[in-house]
Length: 248
Image 1 (cartoon, rainbow, N blue to C red):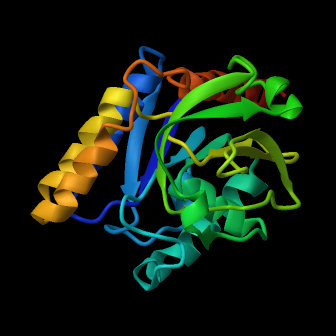
Image 2 (image 1 turned 90 degrees about the horizontal axis):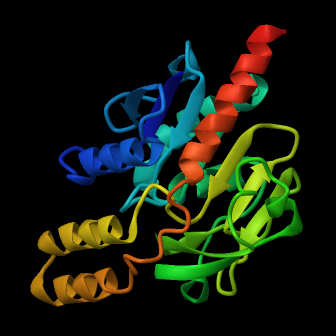
């Protein structure tokens, strides 16, 4: 199983390796080969998906789909999304990946303080989420780790809402008729790993901002890792889909 992780991390960001390690832990001992591409190192192109069986698109830390610094590679990444959808490639977007997919499907991405979230939050599965082959193993109410300022406020027309929360309704969706899922939260992170990520941010900030980042780190509950198996469930389903396609 050949899995591609697309990263949106600037050169020198210590979270490049941290993100890779966390995802590898979530996928566990399953048989797969994980390769990575970083949009800051090479311009995204459709050929990135040559020979790939499953796609993961990670978070960004400091970048927004609206950020002028993002525009040189956003268009190319949308071409990657187009090919994934055309090829029915099992795919999963996380945080930035979720927002860009929402935008790509014709939805909006907004920056609103009332929808911003940090820390461990409670989410609720929709009826469609409970019946979904990837999300269906989660309890009807579950906790997840999140940190974002941007969000997709409403499901795009082509999306099926799978999970939501009070502040941010669009926490997870699947593209209708395609094996492409996305989440606003971070199933790649355990609570303690989320704390580590915010502490790493704090180490790079001036003292006043660092204190705020340290306070944000304490908002993550290390005993609330309900979504720890979600990426593994995705990969298991992707393997089943890939096997069925090859059998045909």
